[in-house]
Amino acid sequence: MKKILVIGSLNMDIVIKVENMPLTGETILGRDIQYIPGGKGANQSYSAGCLKGDVTMLGCVGQDEFGEAILNNLDQAGVTINQMKRSTDYPTGTAVIYVNEAGDNSIVVVPGANGQCNSAYLKENDSLFIESDYVLLQMEIPAEAVFYAIRRAKQLGKTVILNPAPAPEAIPEDILNYIDYITPNEIELARLTNTSCDKLDDIIYASFSLVERGVQNVLVTLGERGALLVNDNGTEHYKAVKTDKIVDTTAAGDCFNGAFVTALAEGKSEKEAVLFANTAASISISRAGAQRSIPSREETDRLLEVKFNYS
Ligand code: RIB
Image (cartoon, rainbow, N blue to C red; front, side, top):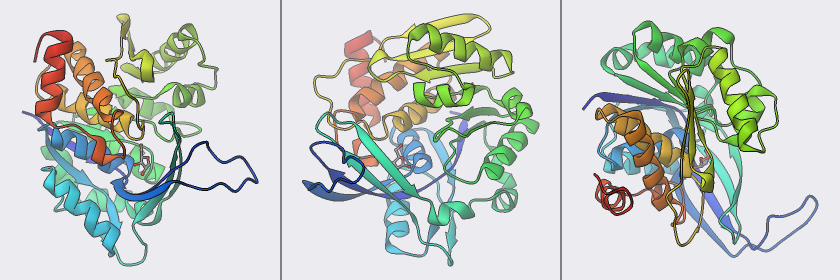
């Protein structure tokens, strides 16, 4: 089992169930409010931990109850958190999430302490870069920290996975050359390439444009249409694992990323890793909440065996 380093955000999710999303200028009544540990970085570490990856996380929370609760949750999932930063000046990041009846969500993040996950802090923890084999990042911490981490990880010969969420306006051209896997959804891919990504052909075209610019592999998560892997060898479309009920899609992409890196770190092939990630993500959407929805290794292996006849 190789070592995974996740660098990213930690938020307390304030999840409000609504019948329909509020329109601009509209006041609506919510049905229920819950506080659930989240943040894309924390969700991806949590997913890797639950799926039995050897995972360490770097990120920053405040000296408050939310921060404490999120760190405890990660610890319980087996994520190594002993180099996590605690800010005295900023509160833990929070996200307000509306989830409608179809399980779709709208999210507003207030980064708070996540803004303190900067390159100076990452430099202090260089030994974790050296020890790791896979470095997984998202874009909810300062961009300068993400780009520093990618350059440093590549200098050390590590495998770099970037989940470009939320999608930045631009990624420096040299950074594209250092990314082994970029894992956008269609919306993020459209923003990154400045093209429309409505149809599968558009998505393939946009993905190839990133490959031409230097990214090794573009792995697009397509929700109920599965996932698409595009690289120099061509394209491979993996169907989604069907679920009977969609309750909440929050963190499905995070679950996918954590599962994908765990499978690679175990030595699974790319194809096996995508099937494993699709399977874990399909379980996560049948449950409410971010980290609360992420399945165990046993559940994922069981479903993998039922659907694909292997574990
Ligand atoms: O990807 C889902 C996550 O996005 C939520 O947990 C929320 O905190 C935001 O970071």
